[in-house]
Length: 395
Image 1 (cartoon, rainbow, N blue to C red):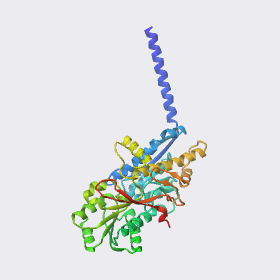
Image 2: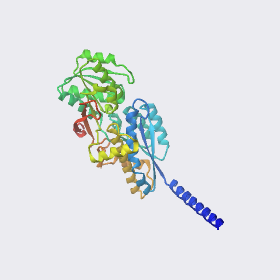
Image 3: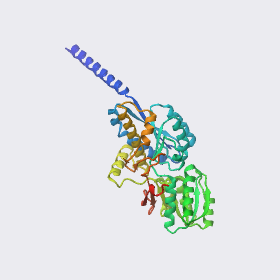
Image 4: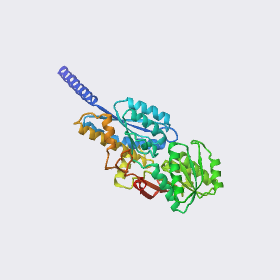
């Protein structure tokens, strides 16, 4: 009797293992669709790169079962571009060689996105950017390149208009010599002069330095009422702090590169009374936004740092909706990269968490918004003072 029972148990175990093996084989046999992200995950800008990557990953994770039902194994391929154009290009070259990858969501830095997207274009790999604002990102007319955020020729002028509306008619401009920083500073400069403001200085700084005394003393000597900084939060926060320490009384304004909780950690109480424009805003006050923050916290153990996590989430969903549409049109067949490129560009009327999306002929989002935000206390996020439809600045 014991031998019979033992034999029965052995057969049961064998059948269970066989069934598991067959199931695993069937699972592994699903065609793979990979979506990559490309943001800085190391270095001084890692805080923002990580939060964007997390928003992207959350969107994909929520749709894995949906794509499994369509017959595909949806996978995430995060990449660390280190905010370095050379690293970005190297990553792009690897991504176009992996034929399972059908889209890339990124980058954070326009100076990385521009050369990397040239490589994506060679490989017919669709790119949906949650954050790149430089005009050259889309003005080159590459069919693979799209962005869901506003351009610098919207946020630069929006910043100029806002400062001027405060009665601040003179400004000193500094920028970090990157494609992004110089680009947005130049757009600000053109608009500020056009509306009657006076630009008393324009200087480039080197990112990563610990002391910007030289340019700060030039600001003092100029007598400017305001400073506009084209650059990212590590340097911007330090400049704000040092201006305060030196007793240089100016109103500080920057672009969306300042949009990080880290800027408060760096600048401390000196952040009070400063402003920046952003192409993203805090979504937690909406019902969908609160649900997103709760899901983000549950998955990653913390709240998102800045509005761009939600833009990463929307950018991923724009790509996934396009891919799903192609699968449906193909009667369930795997999309080609060329089909995905066309489908992403055809996006119209997408209703997202952070922004609605309709791409024009060069991949700009005609439904994007520019926000003006200001710090009334040393606490992130700052208050949204004004929202401006990007259509107000479209040529």
